[in-house]
Length: 381
Picture 1 (cartoon, rainbow, N blue to C red):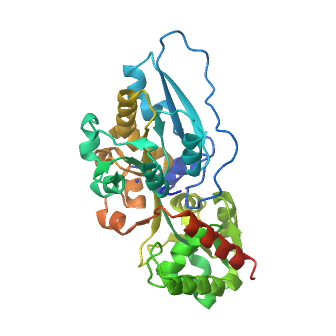
Picture 2 (cartoon, rainbow, N blue to C red):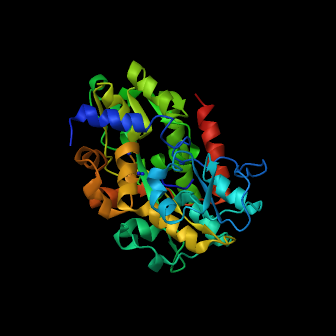
Picture 3 (tube, helix red, strand yellow):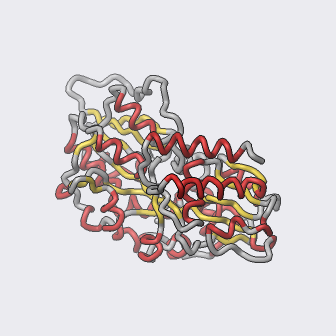
């Protein structure tokens, strides 16, 4: 999942948005959507990275990562220091694949899932603690993000990219802009709500609207969440599964609210001169946080640590923010990020980051329960 979930992408606003939008196009951004939902774990055999034959004694580093993050702008320092090392990338479509592939025997030196899958990998001894003293850039990693990668008093994950989820509103089409997740249920928006097709995400938003902890509920509280979602169903115009779908519905005016929208949609519609606002709900935005871990089976731990450090370098992190519009972990990179991007993502606002509700690990039982409820909600209209 998750996550997760970077700052979870100076010139005139139009020029800035054009650059960010171009960077978020399929040719640049990771092909997977921000991993807020936990689909069924893949049953297909794990994909092995394709690479040319190695010469005898050649070193090889295998990364299980999102498509778009393999470009040299992110790991150029490693390539320069280790030109003899062959780096192979195998691409993810969701965080669940990290668990299933490692479980099936896939050998990787670095993996890049999101926070809602970190715990299960640690609990199953699939990843090893990270010696952060060997990371030159570690002292500048945001402490609140670093803490999420800590388990049993040890650092297992190095946060790298993150992003928001919130409600994107066509301001010119509504009488009143929502101020909270609870406002989604206001009758004035009926028939004009496009909501992310994710049972996990919907459970979280409904729980926040009710003032409940999404991840720790009694059966009675869960029933309140279920009823809350069933109440919303008649007001839903459509359930979107990809950013393009949501952007089109908001651009056409059919949808007034895009629930669970990512900041990339905000940038995209602003670039097209639509009057939109990306709200900061009083309960807090939800978000995804992703980062690097080293599998327990890695035989190249020192190289893996050097690769993490290359990705954490200020220039690499600034590139992630400036060209992809994502949130970042290395605070030393802020001075290299375009001021309008900093403002757009609130990268310099620690209160905003502290109030962001990042997705957490859920059990198989929770996942199945939430999925069943979501299926009921979608068929109840």
